[in-house]
Length: 312
Length: 282
Image (cartoon, rainbow over all chains, first blue to last red; front, side):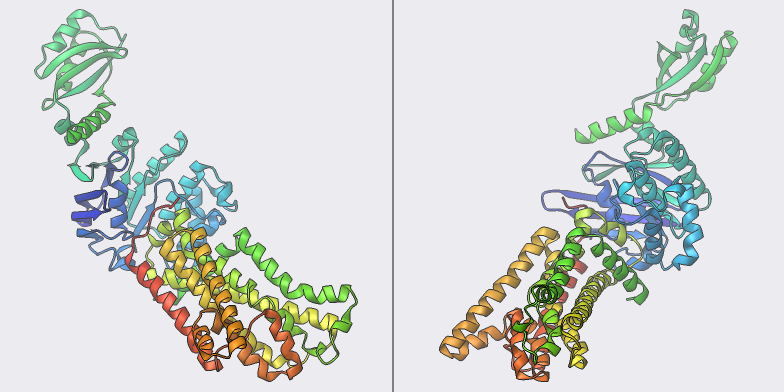
């Protein structure tokens, strides 16, 4: 697989605070969720990748190039949307995208149809001629993502792209990002919205206090961090009879079964997957199984556990 | 360095500077200072103040009057915010996260702001000439005007570059404007005192020290070029800008202008090339 990002033992010494050593490798086609509490080093890592700040030591490579020494070449196919973007308020969205196109060396008159399509894509078509100063926070966020996509980059680096976006916009962005990856792109996305990360990302990089504490799949992160897993069994009607609770409790790997508003909440050993067995029991007992899945809050719990664990 | 990218940033910078209300206000004031005297004299019908031999040369008033202070302050204001405001507003990181080199960004911004300053000076000269013609009739010796404008533009690079440098070093627009304006005013005041002491004592030491103040070549360069081209009666008009040529020649003045401007630009460039692009500075 082609490696688009490689960070080895990168350290940024700010004096009172040191970020690193950070190690991170990202392959082409991944959507990496970059997680970490405020001030943990996410933005510093991203800014080192973009050649905006110089690492004190270590090696940083973007598209296999040094983003500081070979900045122009390394950033040729990379789009970036910063956290809480401050865009040029005196420009209009169209003008900002034209400026970006010119920075990329695209003939702006020729690039106009692509820029119009981008504005349409992020839902800003009718605001193209407004001054950015007049746009809402969510619109500015949308515009920031649009500017990161000018010139059809191969890698998107997005710092909190969903902040301030309304639910319809979130769905729209999710689809845009999935389509981008489907077409061969790679995304590195920092976020505090874990449900968003869970639904969109193919892998995680978790940083805390300047150190990378996890890199791998979401499932692996949950298994590594949590001592048990929560399975939600949705029933119709939700109230389960005691014999069903007893039968589910006897399944191998199940630690505890408790009632939940939707049906049952099953706590299972982290290395076992009793979902098939539980489903079979519910169906054979004559119940209506409406759903069976790992609890949505697992990533949140794993993340908090990981952060607490590192802090300890 | 790719000229197309430098041009992109130059256009962007000129546009950005024009979008700032304080720059627009100072530009308006600069032009007003250059143009208002004609209409004031016309309004009070006191053209007897201006003797007939001086009337064909009255365009010089509007061209030189704003040069000493207002053009310099406009230069300081445009340049001090050029780099620093991008850090303050957090826009530098978006611009520099694209495949553009820092040199392209730096020189584009430098040239864009400077081009705007040149346009302001040209506009002031044009309006002065038009107003002088309107109030005092046909104007003479206009062949010198392009040369004067050119030397004024060159002279303006000194404090434009100094403010640009402080903007990058401090990354705070207000602070860099205050510091560069202080350098300018201090130099003007010390220069004035040294001139006065020289006139009083005739001691060469005062003149020698004055030679190397940054305001000296800025004031001297256009005057040294212009004064010999006009009748001696016109020299009173040149003094309206409160400036006195100190350097012995146009070449010496030009070299000092270049030395100050280039040094400031190189310091700023060296700093910008090595330092991190800071996040939004509040």
